[in-house]
Length: 264
Image 1: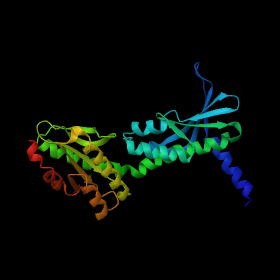
Image 2: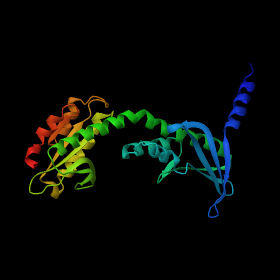
Image 3: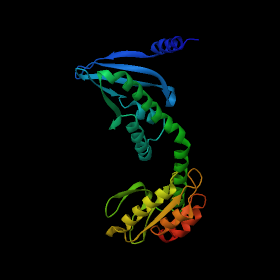
Image 4: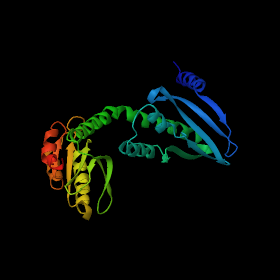
């Protein structure tokens, strides 16, 4: 079988599968919207909009579809996933502007850039699917932590940015000091647990050094199921700065370690 014949058959079929549409906007340059036969979450096709903004110069955009369709499908685009998506985008020579994935190209590289752009969209969507169970499990642990506070009728704020001396830090549950000690709890998970331990040791240190947090107790819950094993070294690092470090499969340790009964 001739190689050229196989390639031609594939390209002919691919050309028929690509759907194009001219997009006109009175306030913008004419664009071509390409529907590429690559599918991401929800079986949506990858769509690339190509706009010539000056002679021989083009900008490629997903029109915010990659992240938008994930959200519309009921998937939570977390800050951690957004960071991962930005890293993937950079690997393909693309970048995010707000929720729009974009890439600039000249005429000579346009074909190759359209293909790379489409691959970037699909890779970002596929990474979410691969990590979906991981994110679902983390949220389950967070919900279990919240139930402990609700059961004791302790009012708390969720997804709260606790100020530190240098910057703010995200905690899942926060109870402000009010005559009684305050509490901040974070569920942490990931595959590089040693690096995570160093990050959260700094975060706790920074929170403690802020003068308004002198009466704030810090609790860290380590996801033991969907992340890599937390080593004794990683735990030791975290215990230097947090009041309690508890595994996700023993939340009683968190409750007793933070002495939540004193907040009731």
